Length: 111
Image (cartoon, rainbow, N blue to C red; front, side, top):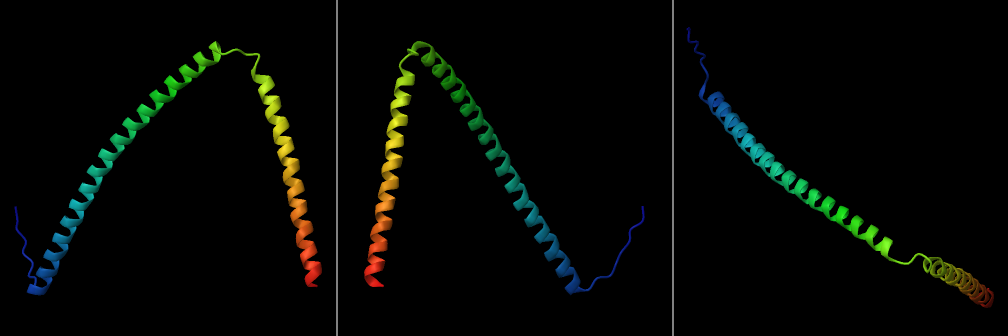
């Protein structure tokens, strides 16, 4: 096997060494970030699995609750809520109209 030698002056050798050390430093940072990413990714998947289990258990509890609750009372409550919402909306419109009238009166006094 042949050995090749290249003559490099002192400044070029220092620059090359600095670049090599800088590259090694960047690689070490990259490795650290990759390890942190893999650890965080594992934690994320564990949390997602826990969430899925919790959601499935909640769904089972909800279906059990729905099957045990009486079914006749729900529509009456909904209709009362709708009536109250309609009343609130009309009151909001009236309040809005009253505020507009007051502002118009103030403008008429100023103008």
